[in-house]
Length: 176
Image 1 (cartoon, rainbow, N blue to C red):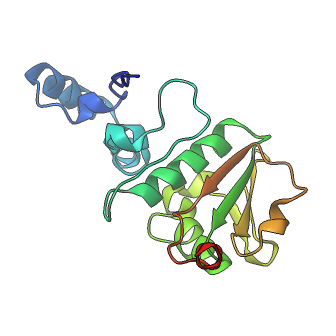
Image 2 (cartoon, rainbow, N blue to C red):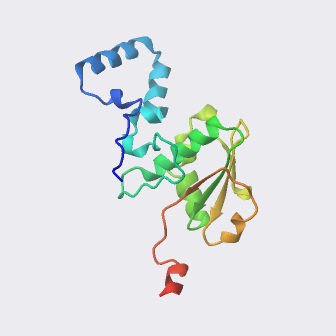
Image 3 (cartoon, rainbow, N blue to C red):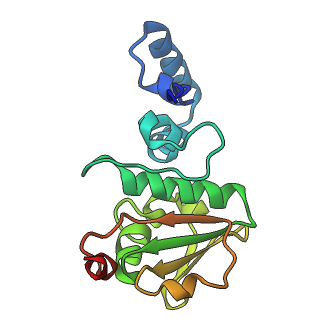
């Protein structure tokens, strides 16, 4: 089945070289206060993300980013988590990685993690001892290790954001 072409993101005009788009951006810059311009440049993910880093436009159940180093997979995942939490106060999100250290160091506290992607006023509260992020609107994300799969049994999650699959994991070794 041929893949449908993705509709351009709302921010694609920010990257366009079309003279009409350049003129629109200059007009926008004149209308915005300096702090609004700074926020647009820093926190408007749809504006500066590549279209391939944004979730599919149509309904989806699984979204896979299969790309190399430097593509922005971690940031895309963090921005997706932030967007889900910001727009759904009832969201219960599972952040799953190869180890708890990986989830914490990369997905939560890393340079492209959830905390780095969240502007100051909209940042979640991170409680490392509880392995939990809590947003002001009530959305919650819990940290899980793939090494403890039983921990995922029981809690009800509305969303999940797994990390990259581990190579040479113990489950792979067992199958050989």
